[in-house]
Amino acid sequence: MTTQRTSGRRKQALAAAAVVAGLLTTAACGGGKDDGGKNGAAGFNAANNKVAQASLVKKGGELKFASTQDADSWDTTRGYYGFMWDFSRYYSRQLLTYKTQPGATGAELTPDLATDMGQVADGGKTYTFHLRDGITWEDGKPITSKDIKYGIERAWAQDVLSGGPVYLKDVLDPDGAYKGPYKDTSADHLGLKAIDTPDDKTIVFHLPKPNSDFLQMVALTSASPVRQDKDTKSQYGLHPFSSGPYKFQSYSPGKSLVLVRNTNWKASSDPVRKAYPDKISIKFFTNANDMDQRLLAGDYDLDLAQTGMSPQGRTTALKSHKANLDNPVSGYVRYAVFPQSVKPFDNVHCRKAVIYGADHVSLQTARGGPIAGGDIGTNMLPPSVPGAEGQKYDPYGIAGANKSGNAAKAKEELKACGKPNGFSTTIAVRNNKPVEVATAESLQASLKKVGINAQIDQYDGSQTAGIIGSPSNVKKKGYGIIIMGWGPDFPSVQGYGMPLWDSSYILQSGNNNYALIKDKSIDKLFDDFVTTLDDAKKTQLSTEINHKVMEGAYYLPFTFEKFINWRSSRLANVYTTNSYNGMYDFVNLGLKSSK
Image (cartoon, rainbow, N blue to C red; front, side, top):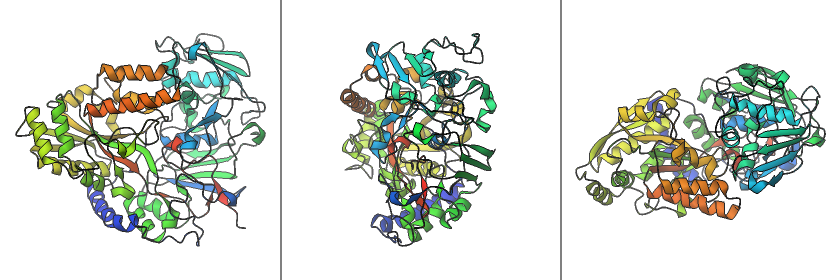
């Protein structure tokens, strides 16, 4: 899943890292002002994996979001930013969605437009869903199975609607036979053979082969219904037609967005959404510090992007407003990855030399320390994915004996890979991610001590897909180390690790398997996972895949990322959820009653 961070200047980032490092002892020991709710705030971490102020929630008022980042698109087919998926549940519904509960329970699926979790037949290749009574569009017309089919079909129109996830496209039509609704020659433009709509309240999916995460895929925002007569194609993201409790009133890209109540939505038809506020607004800022000041002043309720406060805002908040803060694990792993096409990283021992040579405490500090950056990452499976073991699985002693680096072991590995005197390489890092630049400089300094001389190349962060996503360019530039991060599209090893580690996902552009892993045993484990319907077996396979990846030393994990996120004292029924990687679950947020 994609996140966005606010860019800033390199010197500011380094200074901020130093400031945060100075705060770590205070924050970690519970220092800073936490009034325990006396001034209206719920208390530090009061909404972290638990519900804060649920009993105080009221109906009505305006919920105010602030953000330095607009969505990639508000079109349900095209949106891929994590906060867009979270926010889109205000105006879109799916057959299934996530439970509105905190923590791990929030990552479990529950029926939404569907009456139940569906009937599975034919060894996991056929899924049948029936629609609820009373589900309507914002103009009062019923939502039909054909609307859901059409909404899903739009993912095939990548030439018009690029950008969103294509899991359903790949699973339902792996050969790419269907050309999408805009090139569909059938009269109703519903020619995708993998989906049947025998009547307006029944939809049947036919998979060529089983996929154990199919229910996760129909819960994605990209599986939302879209009504054909309201489809404005590439312009749809400017004013999506609502199937949820709120509808677009106004949208000025990069400036503001306002949702108001959809008066044709029926609470009796929706077991998920409480629709507490009367109005929901987003104000977009150009400067993160300005936004954080307005949050601290109480002018806005929370940050839409949910990627943590700016260093300046965080410093003030930890000192004076700690009761308004939560420090969730984000669900993202931040890491360095070693492309095997760039010598000497085709040799596992050279890769291990970097892992042992790195100072992992220094890397953690560069990312903000244990409070704002996260726990030291010891492996590549994030905590929200079943099968994750956290720091219990630490094959290289990254958080243990070797946390400050192990020069002796690094030199042993250099000798084993035929580079006893070390080697030179290049670290590729996005120029619009200050914390990543600080991380690269930390890594550069520690590697120099063991004879690995790394220069840093800051590339255009807005052009990632064509720069580090191009294996030929990576080889040409000699990018032996790439700094990156990744979070799950849905909480499974398929929704997280397949694009990173499965050989079939190596692409010539937009590649995410940066290490160019072509391991038949890993591919086989993914094949087994996809066809396994038993949850316990899936969890076991997930753990095995992570172990295989770590044994190959393709990655140096930095952190299991954490954020410092703000919630205003006006918020009620607020909690973080694993379904959106530690973000607050937006859908049932409300404002506090004055009683």
